[in-house]
Length: 293
Image 1 (tube, helix red, strand yellow):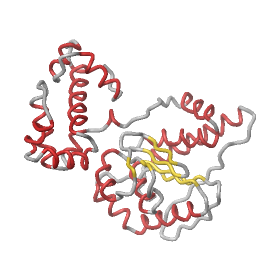
Image 2 (cartoon, one colour):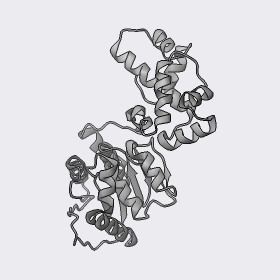
Image 3 (cartoon, one colour):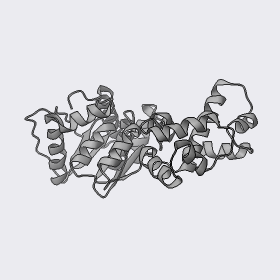
Image 4 (tube, rainbow, N blue to C red):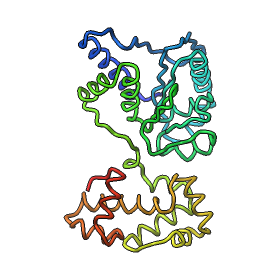
């Protein structure tokens, strides 16, 4: 796509080239025949069953840029191309903001999908018929697959390689390219960024950070937001895709990780400072969300 992420395209080409190299080394033919094409007003392509159409991430940095891209001629052309590819029996995959192209084409309707975490609220609002799994880095609901934020393109490509060249080739690519296994976007999500999209939720987040050492209830958070508990829970789900309990846990985990990385405080003291009487409770929470402690 015009203005697309150069890194996302490079990751795609490098991982496929590496997979082909390992295929040759194992005495097999290359797993992928790779072609690239630029989306223009007149781009056409003849798709076949067995093709894998990969849409690298878009280079949009704001919601307004994304909307402009989707309604513009290049965005509309891309939507038509992926729709035609799927109709021909091709598999279609995308990462980051490009997942919106698949959604616009109707390819994700009734399916599980993910997208870049910071655009999750607008995705959920725009495509309520898609089961959005925000925390996952890759959701492979074949014959379509989606991935999260920009660098999740590498995770998406490993999933593609595993399906079409085999798990061993995918694992070899990961080792050769030093790609760590990551299953969740959760450690990278900035709660402050998401909460800031709703003034009331932002008020609750700010209040919780100031009272981080206290035991708080959903009623406390709702009161800080100036909302009823039911309305607060509904708006929090829409903005952050979290329940009030998980919202509080995520903020406590974030603060605990920051204290661990920037101070010499003991785990016991950090636990008390973020509202947990038992360090084991904090450790379980951090392990679940993959925060090191």
